Image 1 (cartoon, each protein chain N blue to C red):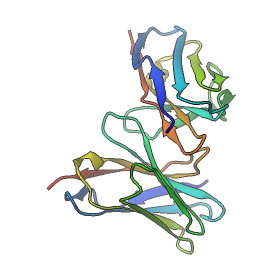
Image 2 (cartoon, rainbow over the protein chains, first blue to last red):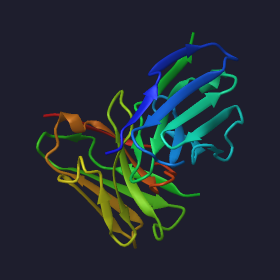
Image 3 (cartoon, rainbow over the protein chains, first blue to last red):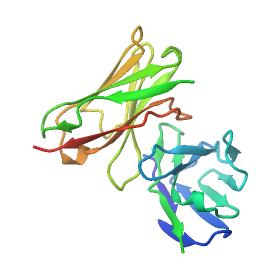
Image 4 (cartoon, rainbow over the protein chains, first blue to last red):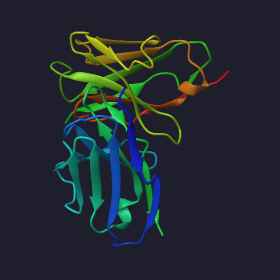
Length: 106
Length: 115
């Protein structure tokens, strides 16, 4: 079975900081990877699909890249509304979420 | 705009069956796959499985011995049954359209397993 890892598990940053999260798949998944944002009490919200495509209406400060087994998610300039937990999710065979990265303010 | 709404008991006793319904409005249930996803408190989402509009199913191998999904196309509803629940099945349960691209999502319903 495919395993997904994310790092870090949590991070603290300041408004305006560049934030980077990595996601690794245990086997090649091509570009079959999505990135999600989840705020407390809410369903996850899709930000990036197919590793690098921004979903409609998502601010351009969010970006994703990578393929195969290594993926990177970046927030170019952290905003207050970006405080949330972020998940990568592969769909090579069936949907599988990573363990998440909690982003809060320093 | 398609809207999904979960319904069902919020409390289930250990060893009993969790039963949830997802009602789809604003669009047809036809021509899509429909997933159930759960999220235990403090943990990441876990895909449970999907059902198609014709009733074909595919389940997460970790749960497939206890899961049954079904669909009622005329009523625009699909269903989840999870048997022999334990405290580990306590979670927010979401119904979601799709599998490759997941969305839209229902608001979720919290199911607690406790005696």
